[in-house]
Image (cartoon, chains in turn yellow, purple):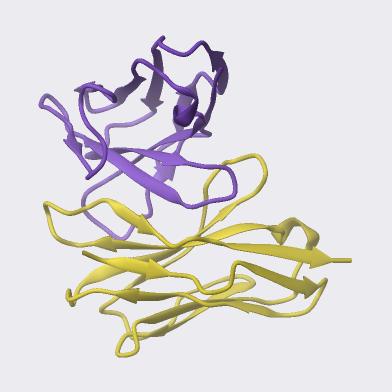
Length: 116
Length: 115
């Protein structure tokens, strides 16, 4: 079974600075999807960025980018120019491409604090 | 991506009773899932809601305790039966399409407190 590990329970960043959240995963599959979700206190899960395993190019969405290292099974999230609104729980997630295994598996989460 | 309406947003229930949570999606989706989340913790998959057939449950979750219905491609319910204080948690539904790299959309969650 696939597992997702986030080794940083909490991270802190100064406003306007850059922070990187770590994620590793374990799988025997070659094709899959990886995601970062943000969950603010409102509980709403918000998709931040996605990456397809077959794509070598790292995904980028405005201030958010990933460092995807397939061989190392690593998928870190970089937040540039951090803003107060970035404060939230961040979850790394894995989704298989297999037809009968399409649920999403989540890491334990990293709580990000942004200091003004 | 799909938009999900989840109801109720919160409830306080007596032990031994049951609560049904509803999720309505604004478009037809292939996949629907139910998760449980303790405050400050990660999401644990309860089951995959299959349209027109019995849900597929994860280890540790059983149909008698968490019956799930999915009568069509846009609607699903999760019932938490014979509740105890240990069932106090946040319950979230999620939905998405089978094909493509789209992340799944989530409902806003139901905060359940059992007293």
